[in-house]
Image (cartoon, rainbow, N blue to C red; front, side, top):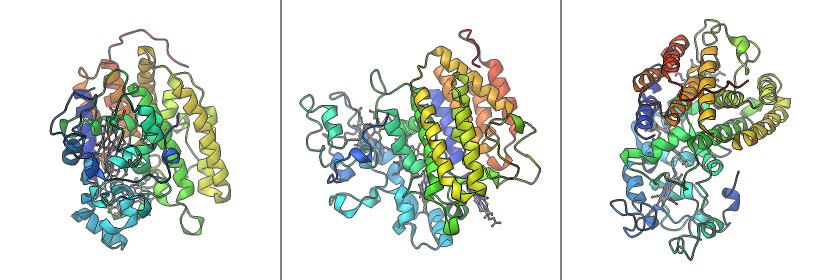
Length: 446
Ligand code: HEC
Ligand code: HEC
Ligand code: HEC
Ligand code: HEC
């Protein structure tokens, strides 16, 4: 039913677009309290960010408004709430019109308290500039006066430091995974919302080049290396998924089904239809019949860390304890989830200090291949995380063009999650692996 939707269309586009191109700081806490959202129209002058074509004068393209309003899916995020699918969802959920429902607007528009809205701020702008860049009233009047006004000055006035991978990850995953105020619940899924999929680097690139235009130019001194952005996204998405467990326990202490891995319930009745007999090798396996938490990102992190020789036992042990507590002992689950969060933070620090030379990229690519063949990505949600990571690593190793046909086949195995066949996924991977010439000989990680 919902499978024909944006997601699989997107995954195909992603494969193509990647082939073609290829620390916490200023977060909400640092935004000045009385800063206001001025609205996208405030950025739209043709002398500012509303140029019809890219300009060279100031180091930024200056056509961001045009690109956003015409090509970026975020500018239609509000409009989507008016379409037939949203109307149908809203009717099933009995929440009145979707475009007025706070639980939908939370992610599909720039929702801020009335006191922080200037008259030009419009909910109908959808996910507009300040949803990502932060409220602008304190920096808008002066931010173009470089060199007198520096980037650091702008940051101090509430501009969000999106160039930092951890900050960018916080910003995007607030909607693409969810947070305390934004949650795509199981009821919404069952009413027809697409299952949320996110990978910071893959989605970031796809979004940056929406409609074949660039939102910002990548270049020396601008963006962090792709693997750093990717890993920051995995760490943050995992943490947000853990946070959702505490934030969205339902009535009577029952946790909403939306925090669990969808495929731990939505699968057929063959025993271990996704497990294929390799369960023993699965580091996150729980007791039989236990619901798995959303673990696609966590599974990727484990493989990346292990490939780089970083220990993961603390994290995996804490994870399986927390999963079991959420399933069986609600009273213990908050403490158990907090323990995973600390183990995750430690893992994040080790991974964050990682340098990404060719050798590391190759080890991670090899590790992903081994893990996928060994059954570490047991369901479509985990497999698509793995596929996005592999395609990115191939691009990083500059092997992507040669592998184009096989990458297409890999994404073809993910097109219909209801027909996901793990054995086929593994076979296509094996071909990718065989095809991947080795640019350097690298000792394998432990
Ligand atoms: C936690 C954030 C979040 C909430 C809450 C949320 N959405 Fe979404 N919605 C998204 C994201 C992100 C996407 C894009 C999904 C993707 O491609 O990964 C999306 C996609 C959609 C789509 C498909 C759009 C398309 O182009 O096909 C519809 C329709 C939709 N949402 C309607 C709703 C409605 C109605 C509600 C309220 C009942 C709602 N959403 C609540 C984040 C959210
Ligand atoms: C979905 C989030 C998002 C939205 C919406 C968004 N941006 Fe951006 N924008 C980013 C990210 C991420 C960057 C890259 C920042 C970096 O790496 O320095 C960026 C970069 C930019 C840059 C270049 C900054 C530089 O130093 O190179 C400008 C200018 C800009 N955005 C303006 C806008 C305007 C104007 C709008 C609205 C019309 C807008 N953005 C909407 C996320 C967003
Ligand atoms: C305020 C919430 C919000 C934030 C913040 C946000 N997004 Fe989105 N994003 C959405 C919604 C809602 C949609 C679906 C819009 C639609 O279908 O029209 C979406 C759609 C997308 C899509 C298209 C997905 C598809 O299936 O076609 C990409 C890619 C994307 N976002 C990337 C990003 C990135 C990268 C960031 C951070 C730089 C980001 N988003 C920040 C809410 C958000
Ligand atoms: C704890 C088990 C469980 C988990 C986890 C779970 N679901 Fe469900 N889901 C159910 C049940 C039970 C129903 C109701 C089935 C029925 O009405 O026959 C349902 C119904 C649905 C439906 C409607 C199906 C229909 O035929 O109308 C969709 C779509 C759906 N879930 C999507 C998801 C997604 C996406 C996730 C992951 C975010 C998820 N589910 C996680 C148990 C689960």
